Image (cartoon, rainbow, N blue to C red; front, side, top):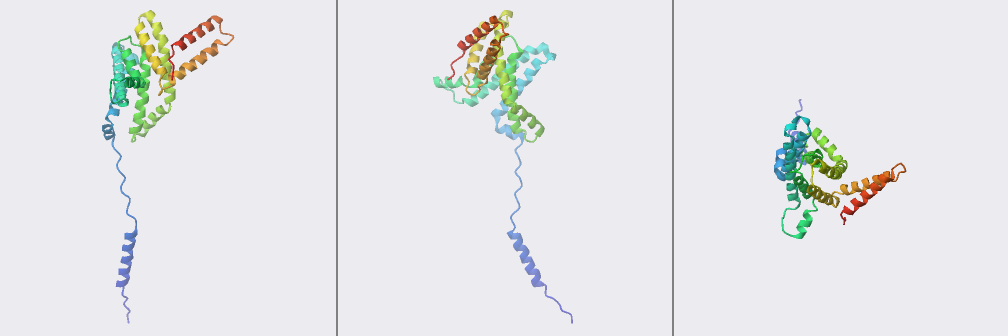
Length: 265
């Protein structure tokens, strides 16, 4: 006699266990959200995108002016680089001080902004004789801020992002380099009077620019460079090998610069 097993109950119980296991298992994780595209990021940050374009224009026109292959249009590139810097400084100043008003407090806050300093700087040299050293500060700042922004948005381009990050990591060295150029430009302008490349009004206005940079709270590198240069000159003058005439001349120059320096407080 053949024994026939009843497998219906077993199959039902196994299917129930399967259903219970499937119901007790956690739901599958949701698909990862798609990262915003570069165009969407630029559209969301319109002012930053325009600032990026103006800074890239400053870099481009500065390079075109410095390269020796475009000497016939070098003055045009010089002017365009300064105009691009004017646009950048004006937009940045608009970001920092959005509400314009005629008041003493507003003017006080205006002249404390670095963007206001470089707006003055760019207008100051627009009508002057082109000099390469004039474009170095605005070109360096354009490179530094452009790399800072590009490193934030170029997340799908790791090679470019890494290059931009390396530039921003050397921010302190670049800011010190800019401050040194700003200080060195002053004696160059004074000497340029003898070759008719500057005038006393330009020197006076640039002196006002230097005093603003010296008293800047956000960027102390100009003030620090003045102190370090003074320490270096005094160290050289105190050496026995230094002629007394040169030492006396340097000490008189240091005293004269100290009298011109604004009170920082």
